[in-house]
Amino acid sequence: MTTDVENGNGAVVTIPVVEARDAFDRQGSGALLLDVREDDERAAGMPADAIGLPLGSISTGIEAITTDRTREILVICGSGTRSLRAAAALRELGYARSASVAGGFAAWKGVDLPVQAGLLDADSAARYARHLVLPEVGVAGQSRLAHARVALVGAGGLGAPAALYLAAAGVGTLTIIDDDRVERSNLQRQVIHTDARIGTLKVESAREALAALNPSVHIVPVADRVSAANVEDLLRGHDVVIDGADNFPTRYLLNAACFRLRIPLIYGAVHRFTGQASVFDARRDDSPCYRCLFPEPPSAVDAPNCTEAGVLGVLPGVIGLFQATEALKLLLSIGTPLVGRLLCYDALAATTRELRLTRDPACPGCGPDARDAPYEDIARLCDSA
Image (tube, rainbow, N blue to C red; front, side):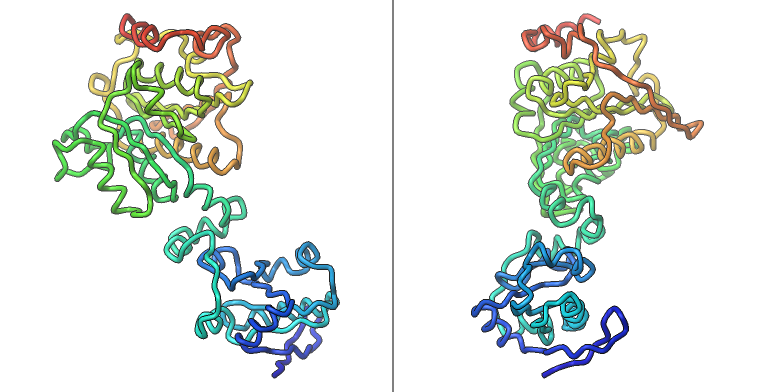
């Protein structure tokens, strides 16, 4: 069977069309089976032993797969339409034995021919479709997110939006660390919780919300307070840590542990109508740490908490989303992270500005003596401020 199709130059080309079972038999005899669907389509599965190459990449990618222009190439797509155009393009490039598989992958599955699992299952291919079409993410990036582990310290104003969007993005494991319970005053800004869950542990409330949003994400609720005794155990094995804490002892302990474990720490803080965010990446020699920014903890008078000073409800959402964005960039190795930069946001003026942060060679947090400082001393330093 043949079908006439117009090639890229407007000429009509006659393309052989083979049935799915015939294509399978020919594949077993040495023919190349080429799946020209897009990455997000192939993410849910493809014919066994086929090679994926999207239609738009035929001219630039085929020689990386085969330079043998005498080899038979059987082209398959979703339903048998794009494969005709791909076969015509291949013939124009000199691959004279190119043919299209009738009915595409639907026909292949319809006659129970072997299928290999894609990097993503059908649910993931649909759920993350808008990620998969981004070249910076794609199937490989989404798979990378699925295997990532992020620790969120705090299930409050900053942790709530960060957790929601990281779960929605498909980060595989989210460890949420917080020992507080939901209070009515939290609901003005901690949008992961609900009125019905007042009195519930925040980590359990967050687990319930995140499981409803994306059941495939593994949520690890830890109803504990970060301390000198447990900080390394809580953070070890994670790829990124998000600082959503509301007190300086926790922030200083997180900074010390992330520095020693070489885990990127994504900082965020809010006060009344302003917020700030940065990334402290201990894997990089040029990265400052939290104590390069705040060498010593300020007094309670100089840095009142939200209970005393108040905070605009939407502000933690803005900063928490900055933190989630930085986490995804780090996990995917894309963009330019906020390393060495402090992003400052003014909600009243609707402005942002950046301050340059440099690493302090004598910093007590990342300087030459930092690894020897006991966590207990760090905690006591904050207690005495």
